[in-house]
Image (cartoon, rainbow, N blue to C red; front, side, top):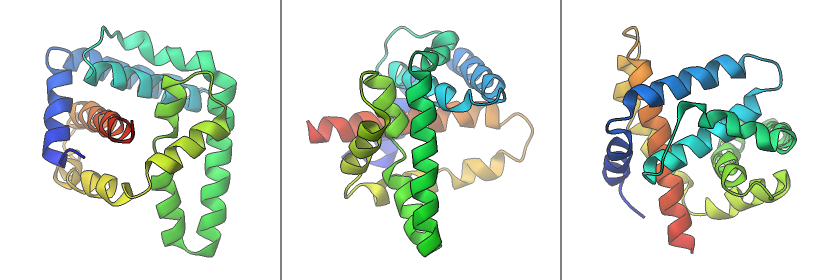
Length: 179
């Protein structure tokens, strides 16, 4: 697997010249996610947008609305993810966090494979993340400094797309390693 620094370079490279569009996509996702039950579809669409971004495919801020193509599956995926994470959290907090990392790439699978069922996307994420949860956790830890800077107004408008693109780069790398 690529290092966190390499994944961040891939994300920055994908964002080059498209930072404004990525900010617009994030804002559009946030606005539409405020509509009841739309959040899961927006998560799938935003995952698809970020995958296209880091793969250097043609993108548009409205790509985030592609999640509505899998609306029912995305909604069901969110429900079962929350349910299973909650069940693991009943045991202890740590197993719940571990499961949250195991399921964290489910929306990427659903966005990339719209014929998958929600359970298949959840299982695919769980299988892919075997042995990689710590790496993703570390990747997120590398953003702590940026998280602190987000207390400055509007810094999140740049950090949000950067983190999302880096997560998409992580997904791409993990999938290519398992291929």
